[in-house]
Length: 590
Image (cartoon, rainbow, N blue to C red; front, top):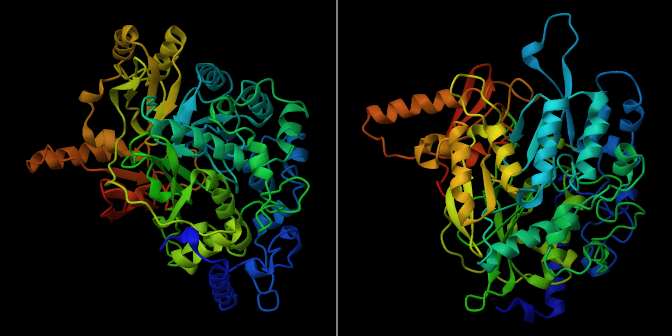
């Protein structure tokens, strides 16, 4: 059936059926129409009304939602507590500070009975498509040396984390990051997080170009607008530079106009500050991935929204996007109501509709996600409760029109894009493995001096970088003449060529876990190399040396290293204790 030819009355009949479904599920945590913080233009059209006011009672907000509601759009209590002389912040301020891109941590290796905890702060950057300018890396390198732990971490969502910043230095660090044209806004918190895409910076294949452009467009489209960010860290002034990714968003004329465009179906709220998020922002964090057919370097199925670029096979012109929704990996030990979930295929949208579709999905989660039980607040639980067909109807009600059928795709393949590859236009890019993402000069004799090597390449060649989804790094825009010099710098600093890396190491990932992560139950990053060595010994002993196994490890069940998609995963469930998970697909689509 050609969905674009559906008569409107049939579409409205389906919406009416969806209304019945919502009435039958009053305990699901959906927001009622008369709940004021999210009221306004929601459900303005009677035939698109999603919640029956008389049958669904307003939810009882959990504590974090109450904090957001009373935060004055993410100002308090952070603003007040940044003015005192304490080296820590309260739990309430901790929850709001996440929206500014920072977590308070304490070094558990340094805990002593009766002694004050060794508090510091971690900052996570917003880096759409994983792109890092030479200027930004120099700044992060300097900041880590001057006011941090002396190293950086590459995350599993294509960005950098800076650890060990004292509370007294927090404003200095964030201001410098914002002034150079970057940001920490959206690195954490109940908003759209850093958007991932395939890290391959290919320029002569249009689908890869479109993937990067729309990643940056959507990152700006769904950003929070509160002025609290500039007030707290820039004293109300504008940053010295605009965000560097705004300079490469393709042919979009005005992304702010796209954000505020109101189709009358409840996406845009009548709110003076946050027209997409309102006072409560989202029930939980929100993650988006964008890729091209066949390239699953991003683990596309683990996202709240997954977009696949569809181009004309002859001309290469953009036609639109396949849309999937409802992925997410976080769970809680001992709670069967929490679980990892792969995203469902929803359908296809034309290129002119993809930004509105993303807004519609976000609005569906904003208005109907669970705000009573935080453990069940991710959008995957909403999709699971409704099922993909009913969730699609919900999204279509916000869009005001149906989606088209899902376009057929080739089989997915996982690629880490390591080694040399042609970029296009006579340029090359080179990916090199950074074990578990720790950018550090290893102190042991003969240990790789990763941080110094990257800085030397950036300084000598002015090379832009791309953070990969598997905690490694790509050097892009390399000329033929520069290839030998880059190889020599890496080799002289003890960094092995990709052909010398054990495939088990190359495919492995682990979260930082102990000692800095407050959620960690046990080790991950510091333990994974030992597990790789043990697995290599077992495989060699069984005459299986040629086997490649994707192994991942996390220090808790929250899934930051995406363990549940791996072939073999170790999930921390106690001190030096791990659950063993088996059966993920090498292509990361199961």
